[in-house]
Image (cartoon, rainbow, N blue to C red; front, side, top):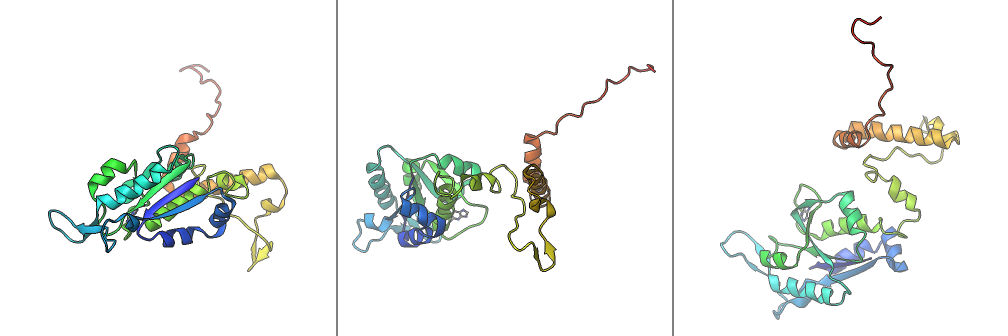
Length: 247
Ligand code: 6GU
């Protein structure tokens, strides 16, 4: 899967993503990172891509033309039109479920804004999705784009060493992940829970689910409530109630 990242800072985004597990996936050709410099599409001899806002107000706005041409230049090289995701605090708040949907695409175009934003008209023409990473404001869309690329990439088959990893991650099943332990068995007087040393896989699974539920109930009551709704407890079988007055 290929990510085409339209930004004023292509090196920053591509270099940061070309590291660790993602870097390996790029080296293997499973993931493609295409940094597109919006300034390359400026018609201005100083490579200017921003201007003052009509109606007044603070700050500069990214102009429509360079962004439009940058998007077109990518779309023209693709076999079919790709989704164009504008990273903005006014977007839908990014979730694991949205990441899962994006991971099924062959190409994604990510548009990173700066300054006070982007001329609305080019968004109307080009953007198919508006995505935020949470209710706080960053100075540009680059870090949000990196968050999206990382999250989506690890769902692409072959990126993680074991596919089970992504499946057991926090959120994949709507719960936070259970606690994990490695050697040694005792550290600073703290023991690894005995059940994990028992070799009884059914017992281990049962313990992990209970820990996941407990942790989610404590730390994310919102997720816990949603999980309970999806997993109603099995009805308890009762003996038939005797009719009123019956002995
Ligand atoms: Cl996608 N962009 C910016 N600039 N700030 C954000 C954001 C995006 N998501 C949350 N805050």
